[in-house]
Image 1 (spheres, rainbow, N blue to C red):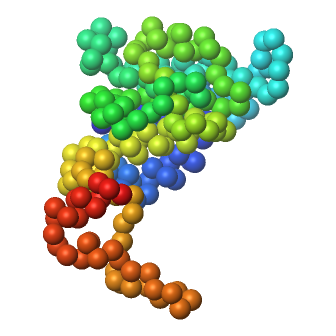
Image 2: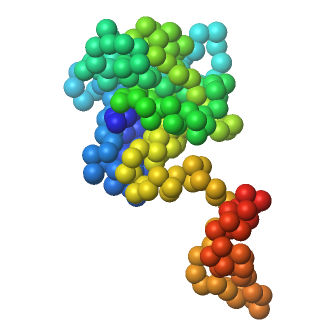
Length: 224
């Protein structure tokens, strides 16, 4: 599976995506992560500063990312894929918005069925809305919010989606049962030692977890 991140900050994304389970999945070729920087699609002499934002029409604070550098970056990501391919075979473009549909485990399962997902990471006050309209003519577009907070940019939501989708792919976690939401799981987990003593008070592992009685353990987890 390939993830294409459209971002001004590749280094910030790659630090997370090169570590731990996601980093191992990349090394083992279970996923591929590619980047396109909108600045690379702005005309100008080599080495010059490539401006990708401007003041918003109608006034207001902050700056807005220009539409066409983002569109060109997505076009580059989509270039290897035929626009004539059946809709289900074309890459999916993900657009982030605080007003979008809240991303869930079910959405992660659906995204895991695509071979390519393009994640558009906005910055500043957002991206010129015309970019989204143009992108819808190139590929299917899903609009998501990741959590109820507003972030500085789309990179954090994009990393969350790459993480959530990657862990669902066969072999990434070793066993399908390691995907917590596919089994009976509790948010409370314990490991050794059985008893922790802190400031003269004992903190123990619940007795049911030490019985080996799986039916009782599952019941306990459901109740939790």
